[in-house]
Length: 377
Image (cartoon, rainbow, N blue to C red):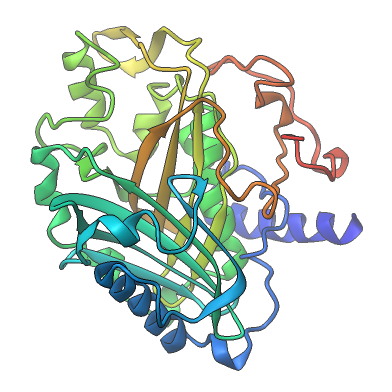
């Protein structure tokens, strides 16, 4: 327990150095403190295996993939046999939209890509864990109901997501993890100052630009917040930090688990598969700091959004966020909760312990007293 506390303290100090008011770091994550990589887990090897995975999807056969005997494969949160799912339905492999994150330290590699399922475009995220040169874990999620207006943002990735980070702007591994984790804390607490957002931070979700809009674009909330187009337009113009400070995401109960698996220090990328949980108890949002907008209707949930989130981090700050996801049953399993249990400072936000009301204060559990057991048990 003492070693856990020391790690948390170090990571929290690193994050605080880059962002005043940032939340303390979470309990250790395998991606953040993995042992040094084995020779078979170098960056080029990982990317090569990822490309072979895409080739296998297009070929509709896993034959030739270096699979471990006990490989676990999930798609849309469900455990299925290798050879099912997108191995059957892929009709075109990755296009010019392809963002790769490789993590030789944890032996994992992932990507967000555009491809086709039954000749229709989907935005897909994949994660592979490689052990001894063989694929031990494979996880895929995808969004298939992409809006036509969003496809223009899914032709080629934003340049910042592809560029290597200059050595002078790279962020230590533990601090990258803490920065991405703080993003989810910021949403849960309705406080954009908790996360180290850069001033130019822009977030895309399923191709939709959800922050810093220059014009009124479609958002994931259009159908849930019926009749609130004017409010959504004003809030959509705000950046990542200021948008959260309006409390416009208070309908999100919690983001747990967060599953930040991949940390690519060379590219400055963190990739995770978080679950956004919506109890459905917030039916009217009370908006803060938006002139002319005091409340906004919300008809969303109970439901989950199983997502992937990729963060671009330079000099300790989040500059780009690329997300995709699909709607799932409320509190649906992710397929990985048993293998990657997580620990949280704010246990009271969990709906099975104390009811959570976004936008209100709640007591925090000191890190030293945090349970060593995952709160979801």
